[in-house]
Image 1 (tube, rainbow, N blue to C red):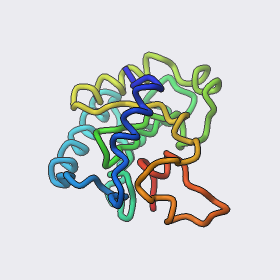
Image 2 (image 1 turned 135 degrees about the vertical axis):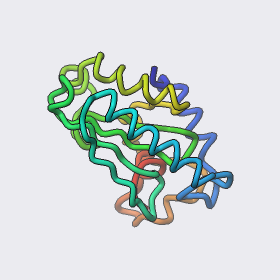
Image 3 (image 1 turned 90 degrees about the vertical axis):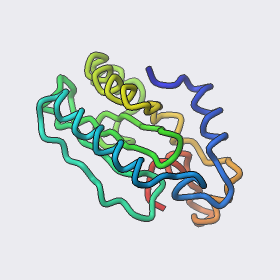
Image 4 (image 1 turned 120 degrees about the horizontal axis):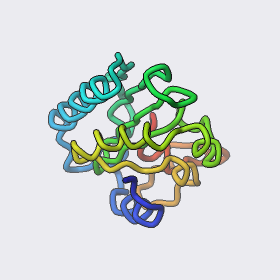
Length: 164
């Protein structure tokens, strides 16, 4: 099950370290990469498909993305799994991140499909979070907002799931 909104906010604030924008101070790159590869393999097996896997992410707060094609699911659109470099957080979205609001996601993203993805995440110790709270303005302590112009403040999505 994904973290509820209160749990998500508590964890985001806990993970928001000053100066550590791409990875936390204790980031183990080889272990994170190996777990990500296991997740990609498990999702391909679970959905009996070939997923598009973005492994070449640089200058970002996320490790990579795995896209499950729509025709391998009962969902209206592809399912995108974005793995953060922080705390084992993973955002599971219908379509590309930000494509659907909460009501559309409830309507077009079948619970059994989401549950199959979340089962694989939980088996590997990941923490699924909803993308929707993450689109709010970043208000943390890391100094991360200094990377952005004042007229385009970053969101919590930018902080933990996007390119810098």
